Length: 300
Length: 231
Image (cartoon, rainbow over all chains, first blue to last red; front, side, top):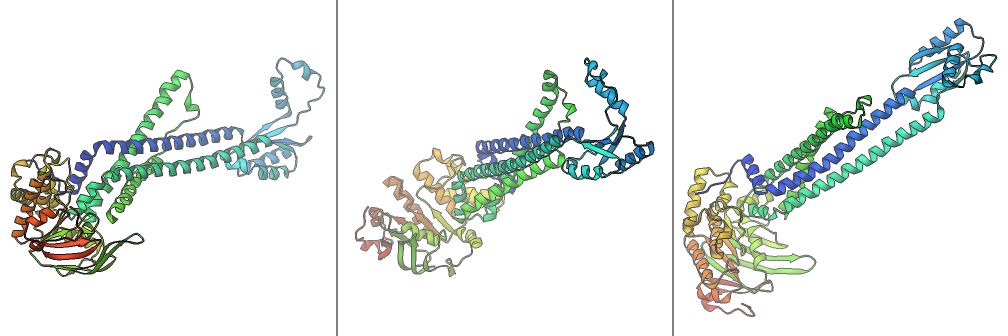
């Protein structure tokens, strides 16, 4: 005599999963697909921000040109003031002679142009590298104004146009990323909620029979809620696992094939916190999606 | 046992399914609820089962006012009221044994208790030799007997059958009604809704005739004559 019944809750969940195996598989596949797209977007966005930050680091410097005829003490004083700036990482003095050598390197092959110069027209300067912080770009103008007020400073250059454009570009990327990420998140919430709703709708008759024979709301709801949570967990784990494998493949094999060293840009996977957040988000989405859908049928 | 007082049920804006239903059914009675399709038979059974609430009026079952019952209490009421549908409402992927056992699983019955009870009720409906079959492999009459067996597991005081023989041949119909009659003989109140006048005439039972949501007859079938009934 068959007696394939499972009185305990976990047993009920297991038997539910077995009975609706294909439906569960499809739901998990949709959840996995949705979260894969979202996680990939997050990873690309994070790394893009990192690359921009690194590019920005190399450009975050200002050149402080000095007036002619300053004494060693005055130059030393200016160096001290520049070093004391909170945003300054390093201060490098470039004498007139050093500047001319550098100019000759630029004009290599055309030294005859420089032979016409009777006097070295180049001023001495300080090259001030700023600390690795993109906000320094946004506060550049304020910094430049402060430096220009130091006695002995003749002129300052920092690639104004580049900094403004770069700052706007970074801001635009961030805004776009947030908006797109938000829209993507809403989309996957909508897709997953609907998928779960349709899955539970297809088991409407099962819920009706349970109500008919006197099952309590708790008895009816809990297996579906646990199933939803498991679907969310499975879907997010599959999506993150797939993304990780693709990431490793891309970093190692594809990099070797194309001869690109991605270590230069330190392409990284999602952080532990973000990964954990995605998994928890998936579980909660599965749970609440199921809860809302089952409640609808319990009220009928 | 069952008392209804001026029960009305209106759907939507103005679709009155039941009008001023006042009736009394005593414990142990066997009652046919008769009328053509659309006269409110199913609606009345749903109200007695607590699946819907009346728009107005009161319904008392064993002195419990089910119009005021909380949703959390409904499952416990339904365990004492068996409901049999025209389309059986069985799990097609579970065996006969599992379908009947399910009604005991939901109350957390122990494995041995389930086994004993399921064997007992399957014996009552003469399906002891079909426990491992799935409903798709059974005849219509056998499926209905499984549904009836499931409705018996909690020893209900009331069985409501909504057109239980609607999808069945005439000789199977007699089997099912006879089975319900046997259950009634043990003291369970049985209410069967049907549009089949011929079936009602065969049995010397009380019948309540409905027409356009109103009770138009309430008598023994030996006095059967239903105004405007369609078979």
